[in-house]
Amino acid sequence: MQELAIPNAVPVAPLTWVVAVDLPANVIETPSIPCGILQPFELLGLHAQVNRLWDDDTLQPPTVEQILVRMNSRADTRLTSDIRRTETLPVGLAHGFVPLPALVVDTRLLGLEFLDKVADLSFQFRWAVDLTALPAAIYDNARIFLSLLVRPLS
Image (cartoon, rainbow, N blue to C red; front, side, top):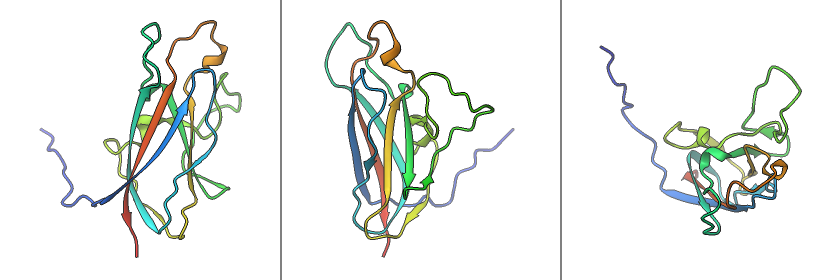
């Protein structure tokens, strides 16, 4: 019988910052959104939530499973990556995006330190499927909230 492994201590994240953005169904991806934290910090985890913008009963509500995310630090450092066996990408996909649930705190603790006074951390979101290429709308427009669970650094 396998025993459950539980860590002795879990890092405390006393601050929560939120990145929020709307992703309409007729747009493939959002622009890059800076996190806006103005002090050195350790990013311990993330929590994602996706809501529908309108209450249209003819469309399915979007969920975190339909959203991909790219996390960047500095202009040249990507903190997410989609590893592929080929350079030919399926329609609607771009390099560096991963499923949004892959980053949430119930999946993993991050422990990423950002030591600059203005953090160079940004997020970009896109649909997992190119909804603009479909003959009819399937999902309602999405409002994405990504909570950053943060511990300030001195």
